[in-house]
Image (cartoon, rainbow, N blue to C red; front, side, top):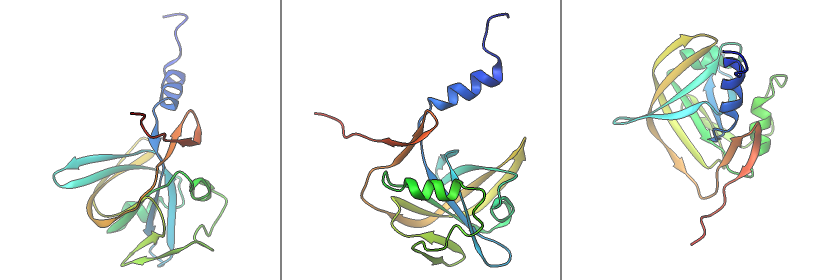
Length: 165
């Protein structure tokens, strides 16, 4: 099939046009310290029971905590929280929670002020390729007013515009 786009390039470029929300996923490490990662590979999994799915890269500093924890937190970011997305995407920063507004929700680090916070019980996880897929059942959380931070075309600064009547 000459002239066609190679499959890897086709996949990579196609995924850039699939808009998604930006989230920070948090957990407690075995040593008791908080950890978190930025994620766009997050989706609802089931409405009955309410659950979601998140994919975590094996080389993430938070991978082992997320793959073994009982609970984890999903924080959907507001359109003005690009700094949080960048902070938790930064692999060189060992203490992402320094100076942030956060507290423990039992065994889950909860960031303050995000668009939504969802406390999940890890029900399943399985490794596939270079990621671990986590499935978590929703136990509670909160929802705030605001607009979501959206990732598309390799940018995390897209703003949702209200629909015009």
